[in-house]
Image (cartoon, rainbow, N blue to C red; front, side, top):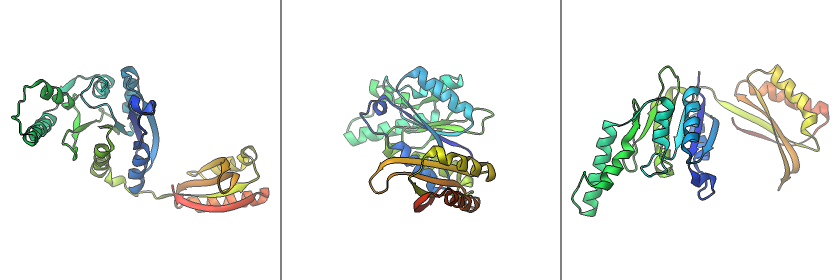
Length: 274
């Protein structure tokens, strides 16, 4: 079965509004390009107990979860330690991560025309970014070679993938994860949705029709998106069905038939990827 995909975005800067999250829309795009979809997302501030609790749920879910932010080496970067606590293991300096970070530090020294001093305090601090939960594996970072990591708990079908909060780093790393580990799920089940604008009606009056459609068409989800101030259609409801491509047409025909029986005033119809 195709796994469920989730997203966790960590950082006070997102919740305070100092930065606008761009990861949610990008992850949806990355998944959609591959015929997949996002099942859930969460936003969490830089609060260690809350991050730990969130990651415990993620590890227990069996889902494929992408987690962005908090894997640097400053005091507000709690994600690595919280992941270890959620798994009940210590953090350890990953040998391959150490090699990559040291190579990056040598490169930085060359670029500055300085000698490489591995024991210097700032260089030792940078090595903290290679401390991951015991048993973790790395995610390559094409931007600056400082890796992310992932953990797949024993007995779990899913995994949690940890990448930096910077989009320029995170997005290629997430694409690599999908292409490396989940390519066999790509475009397995093409999903689509069809909808129609319904004028001068109320959701409460349409609910019995919606319930009937879901009962008579297993595998189909019915959705209702009301709007009170649309710039073109004004007050209306977008009513539709979505699911695997082969299942949508009969449910769509039944929806239109039900709306016509109801005497609904209909507007434009829309077809989108599901």
